[in-house]
Length: 109
Length: 109
Image 1 (cartoon, rainbow over the protein chains, first blue to last red):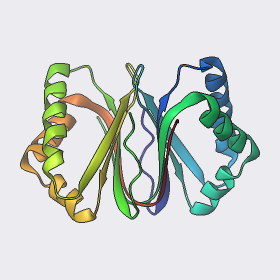
Image 2: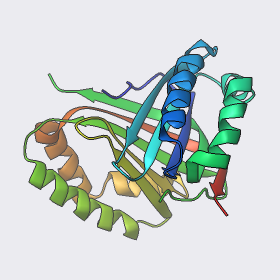
Image 3: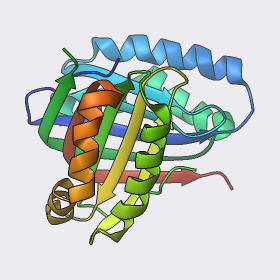
């Protein structure tokens, strides 16, 4: 179920990635841990995640402001996970930090 | 393979959706058609797509400016697809239109 739209302005951190086939258990464990930790960051609004089997993964984390993103960026466990990500888990990735100006949500009746 | 980062500023249109089980062939045909059409929009930079089996789909389309997004938003085939999307294909969706301020890409050596 997608996260709803929020009241702009807010920020979206779009992370797109392709994985190696190394250490999937370590990746899954770390991803679950980070997903729990980010909820404690002030201004964290929610996140969406999708992964095509054997293909691209996209995560989008929503924050009220850049201060929350910066706090998350410097979180020690997050920094360590990023280091391991480059070392083992990711073939490629891209990150886009963006200020949401318009949003809209639809839900079937 | 994820789309690379681009030189900011640019725009990201994040579309997250959950599907109904109606008319998957019509959905796939329309998605392929739109994916071809959007390439002709001036300022279109690229797109990323992922879908978890039976779950959330996320597409992110990147544009150089809001003018391209507006042109795409008003494209007749896109408008018609959105109408059918609400009528048949989507259980819920959310759209976030955001100005990218920072970006970064990594590729394994």
